[in-house]
Amino acid sequence: MALRRFDLEAGGDSFAFKSETEEKIVFWRGKYPADKQRSAVIPLLWLAQKDNNGWLSEPAMREVANRLEMPYIRVYEVATFYTMFRLQPVGKFHVQLCGTTPCQLRGAESLKDVCTKEIGKAMYVTDDKRLSWEEVECLGACVNAPMVQINDDFFEDLTPESLSAILGRLRHGADVTPGPQIDRVNSAPEGGTTVLTDASLFDGSRTKVSALPNLPKPPEPTPEATGRPDAQGPTNVHREEPAKVNDKVEPVKAGDARASTFDDLKRINGVGPKYEQMLNDMGVTQYAHIAAWSQEKVDEVEKLLGFNDRIDREKWVAQARLLADGKFDEHDRDYGRGKN
Image (cartoon, rainbow, N blue to C red; front, side, top):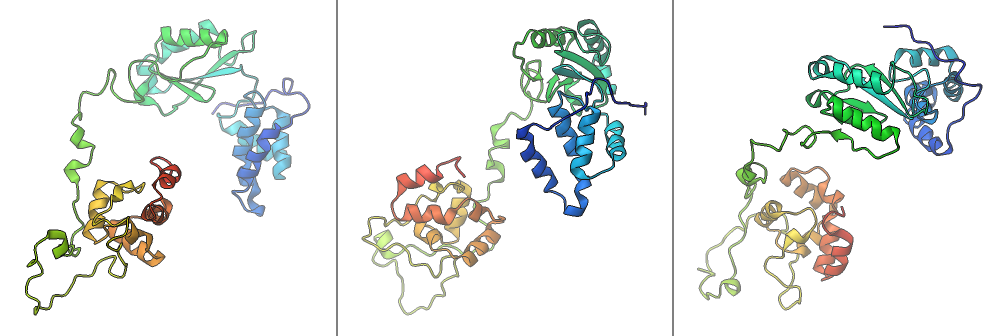
């Protein structure tokens, strides 16, 4: 690794974190116990670099050392070891050009020529203080090679022409759009995908589970529901009713304005057609059933459905109480799709 020294002359004599950064410093220091505060040195150096126009001066490193009660030399060692920390001034827009093998194979050398022509040699800052650049190791976007990182944004699938246009817009204060610079979304194929286009591969229909195995079947319809007076069958035959999740829940009574054999459980945010079917198979057919669940019952249903704290997180019981009381507008306002 090359020797790295910080610029003493350009750093001045003092440094202070911005007021809005103090909250972030408290956040990072709060991750470590009182006797391990030095563990926060890397995030604090990163914050100092951001507050110091993209580079670390010696006073900035000294301020981090004072905050963490560390010897100055220990902070200098960290800052000079990690190349993510820059030790001399950079432009307002600092270009990190990936020069690792995938980008090299895809034209990084041509991009390096553009940076040299448009900006100057590596780590040179243009006279207007807007641009600088350096070559770095892999930035983790190999499938979109060649690419550069400008401040916090990735610009991918570059050509010499597109990179030159981006630098020109930055130099003149115009907006630029990060991400792939060709017709594709993220790392998807250029021009759109040509494989795995069948919607049934993704909508869950091929793996749809109509019911969990070994669950009791729902009770037979009552004569009132079927309209057949003989649906009850022989009265002298004893039948054991299978245990259901709601075996102790009083259903909505007939005559109630809310009465319904099956409520639309999908109205509960978090319950889709598949889970509604599973709940129905458990004997859960009405909002009142869910509204009456205790925490013990919630845990039981979570286990049956294979969830982990989802029912509490999505507030199924609170939603069901509003729906069971007919407060549909209030429910949609507080728990409408996308509000959990």
